[in-house]
Image (cartoon, rainbow, N blue to C red):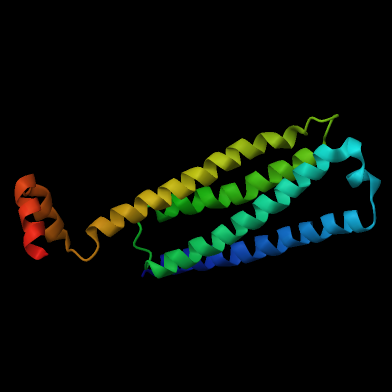
Length: 172
């Protein structure tokens, strides 16, 4: 594993734990609003605010854990997944934008409509899904070529399809 991949993995693990601490703090603050019966948070007129803050807290905590898992899976695969960099960027952007959109949207509510920050949510959601797909596709591509040299891969690519199937049956 290259030093660059180890650094990337460590950064995601650190980022995930720090974001988890931040969103756990948001959860504690929300519980304090409940405990102290804060009208700004609990009144029926502010139900949208309460929902958005809860969604921001939940999505932030979940994406923080996904960042830790991303770092651990990078270490476990030895950084051999081809799409590591793009997935890393997309996941980091999603971890910031998705929960921030809910939290910022909760501050500018008008009636039952969220504030303008809610427009960050779809952007963050698309980034999250793109990161998951990028990692999944990259892991599949790596698994198909795992344990072979570049010469073996080139020879397999040039071999006719029916011979490849025959060779696979022989190996079993």
